[in-house]
Image (tube, helix red, strand yellow):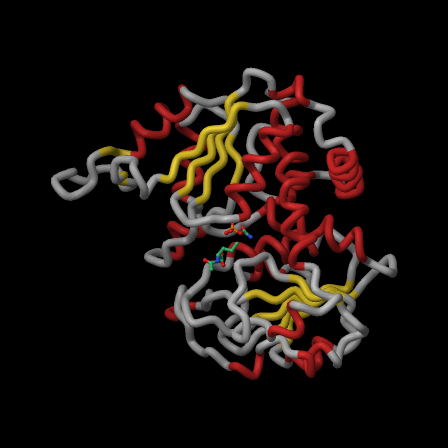
Length: 317
Ligand code: AN0
Ligand code: CP
């Protein structure tokens, strides 16, 4: 594996789940693999889980781990080529990236969609510059269009909790005050399309995701209908994707909050969310605190997903 930017690069899912199970049961078995190797994590955006779980994954593998928060303490970076740099940005990404490459063996990058240009976001301009200019294997810690380490952790969590071979998994949009990227839902859809589960996406009109990510999922604008008989409810907010509304919040319909009444429509479903979550916007207190809530096991599996992927990357160095 040269870089890791999409769950599709996991290849055979059953083998990936087995690799994850081994990592979970033997977290310190591969310390020799990472010895004297440096993991650099670069954050253009905030993070709690990704930051801590990926560091822990690297440490479990015996790696040295260094972290850079680009917006706190580093020079402000210009990302466009050809700009006359007479403003507030002191350094260009085109120097910064190869310099970071000099100090590391593997590089993780978090760089959210900026919602300034759909084309730039969906072409992953920042992540791809790291891949092109760092000279090192790069992995996504949530880029503009995907969050593969989250999706892999979500899929491991479903695998661990499913009670039937083909569970019904419903990904539902839920309201949020601010515009959030489509990376998590795109990536989850990409992952679920690799399985033979029944997969339904529920969102209000105007919030349809990009067709290349929706794939074979059934899409409905009726949340109640989608929830009927669900085994897993995966809630997430995302900003609009389509047309002029790209990156905008076009409605905050509180009728889409996942409540006890909504969960009663399901087949005693598990509740999932990648976190951070806004309570009583996305999900009610009682649902997230219920025994059916998997949000903490899901976050715990972020170490497993990161460690499994880092191990694969180290093995192909
Ligand atoms: C981010 C998002 O929705 O993509 C990160 C989630 C893992 N969420 C927020 O910015 C609140
Ligand atoms: N789920 C997730 O990626 O969380 P952070 O944004 O806190 O890393």
